[in-house]
Image (cartoon, rainbow, N blue to C red; front, side, top):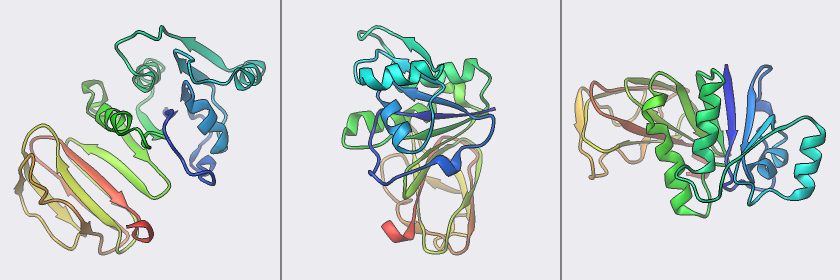
Length: 214
C-alpha cells in the first residue's frame, strides 16, 4: 500500500499532484499540509500533528467528510511529517510519496529530506516530489525516469558512498567512490528517458531536476 504524505512546506499556487494519486492510496496531511493537499487536488484521509497551522474552517470541513485527526502536543521530539511517516508505516505502507516537503524554511526542508534516511524506511520505496524535481535516498539501486537533459545529482549522505555505478548519465561512474563532503556528483545529465544508479556501501541522496527548470 502506498501513502502520500503532504508536509506543511511550499508549493506553487498552480502546482497540482492529483494525477499522482492512485486508487487505494492513503493520503496523510502533516498539520497545515492539509491546506497544500487541497490546493494540489488531494483529499486527506488523516491529518496528523499539533494542529497549530490547520485553519479551523478547513478542519471543520474535513471532519464533516470523515477525515481522521491525530493530535499531538506542540512540545514533542518528532516533526509532524515524521509522525505522518510513522503512522503510514503502522498502517502497512510499503511505499511513501512526499509532497510539499521543501520550501522557504531551509531547516524544515533539510529535516524532511533526511527523514528518507530513517532506518524504518530501509526496504520501503520513498521519494520526495516537487513540481520540477524528485529526491530519493538510495541504499542499493535506483531506476530514474525522466527526459534527456534532466539534471541528476548524487550526494553521499553521512559517509562515503562506495562502489557507485551509473548507466544513462553523461558522466559515467564505474564502481567509483563518492566522498562525503566534496561535490563531485553534482549536475550529471540524463542521456535518455531512463538512468540507473547503484552502490555497494553507504547512502546516496539522488536528485533529478527537470531540464526546463535547471
